[in-house]
Image 1 (cartoon, rainbow, N blue to C red):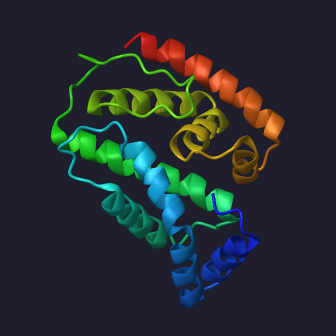
Image 2: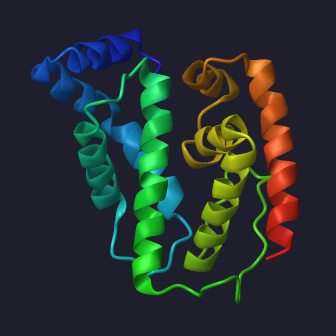
Image 3: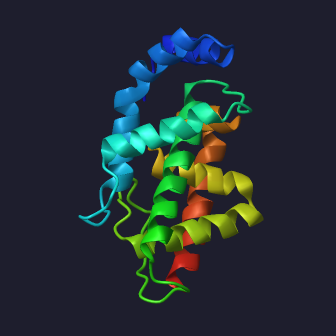
Length: 186
């Protein structure tokens, strides 16, 4: 995800109010955001109203609108971007009138880091489970967002969350185990 150290410099300059740096930053990270969006849209229904570009632009608009966010670095930005994309897709799924209260849901596997969210119902089940996990342990939920939704590495996730890569690895194992049990019950 854009390991160029200049990306963080552009982000920090943008945070400081340099709008030109913000434009350069967006141009620099655009392809990474597209890959992230493509990953999240990969298993969505064919008639989904959002395409990769629309999801990137909608997420970026939400990110730009978050004037209170103190961006630390590029990993932090990508973690928040993944969260924004997840929220957009969940909002879209809810608008479509997805199956409610667990009916017709299927099991989700988080063992494969390249797994795609397949259906609206699955996205809603995973979102609900992540919300429950966040109430129990916010960091475990954030690790899932960074690793699964954003596709960040252990090191990038550690940077975004301010912990060690080893802590991320342990949290990732715990979160997957918890979500596996939680989603099997749906």
